[in-house]
Length: 511
Image (cartoon, rainbow, N blue to C red; front, side, top):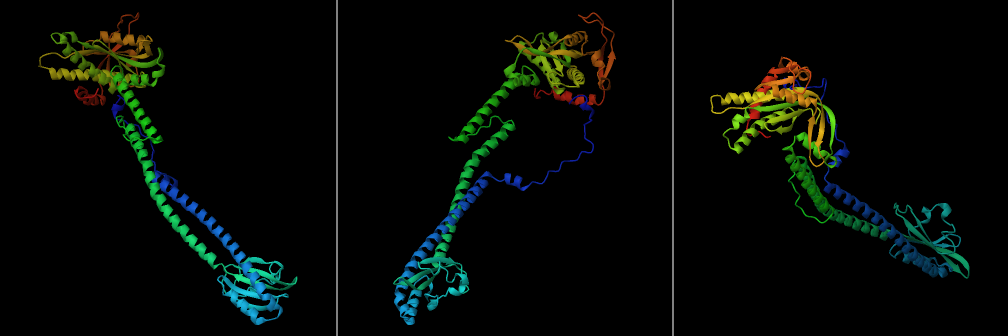
């Protein structure tokens, strides 16, 4: 929370309306279907299409085979009938011709037989007569009633039955003369029955294969989805910061390689986090992130940046440490410097370094902050409030509580990695830093002294009470400077800071 944020004013967008999610289309709903079900549906569809294509080929092949068999059988029977009916035809023995035609119809698959004279006159007929169903122009065509056996397939409407029939004709020749014709009508009942049986067999086989494929695909789909779900859970856990999460399943396929790679990536991320956590204890979080982001190209460099610098020096620490064990001295120093560091983090600042019992804080560097001056003053006053609270709590008790001299300055400075290629440090240098250190040295106990640049910054007068001091000449500078001391904090920032004092003084607070 920055001083500007402490006023309680939050930005808002006038006229903003909540976004209404668009209705999900069928594609989005399909995308949410489990891979196992998609896999099952795909295999079932492929099975049905494949078996349908196979069934069509089988039925078509059966039709051709049955057609050829009917033609061969019909031609043989027609030739035999023609040879048997030749003499009775010449003798005009219609009784015998009728008997021959009747005997042929008794054979399975033959619906009718017709014996014709050379001029096309019907001399004997039994069963179905196809001639009335034929077009007039085709009754005596050369193809049907020629001088050679012929088989023809027609879709005839015979006895109100629109099923296809095959007509087979054979000539009767005596001494080279055409004496007549034999015409047989064959049905396709056996062919249709065979096709129906094949169709039912194909349907049953298809259903069995679809069922088997569905069960197998669901099993295989789950086998595939299970490791994917493990990978999804691992990715979600890594996204939530649970870098200790590992996938225990062992596989020897490509998914196993992916699991191994993901676990190795998690090891690398965990190691990076541990390095960053350890590094953050020596440098600020922002500096640690900057170093890790450019770890392959760390070099000595610097850039001019605008920011604020705070020097906080402990007053009376030498007297406090008298008669204490070295460990107690270290614990006491860490306690005070810890308060300073937490206050800096609270106001988006960076602890640049600890110099003995002095802390150097930087605001607006390395991450830009347009309110770095307000944050620097907020940090300084928060530290002073913490010390005042500690003084009040220790009043009447043995021992003393240290106080701080604090100096604050703002302006341009050089920020970057300084030192040598073997040992470097991210820090800031320049006249702005030097002036902040001088201001800290002239500050009285518990006093915050700031430069004119800080006092004139936007928003300072609205949040802080300042009092001008006499112009002083700082060590190392030729001209005297106008400086100010911070005498108080205005509302509502003052109330907000009092709430944060207890939080910073809590020994259980995370650093």
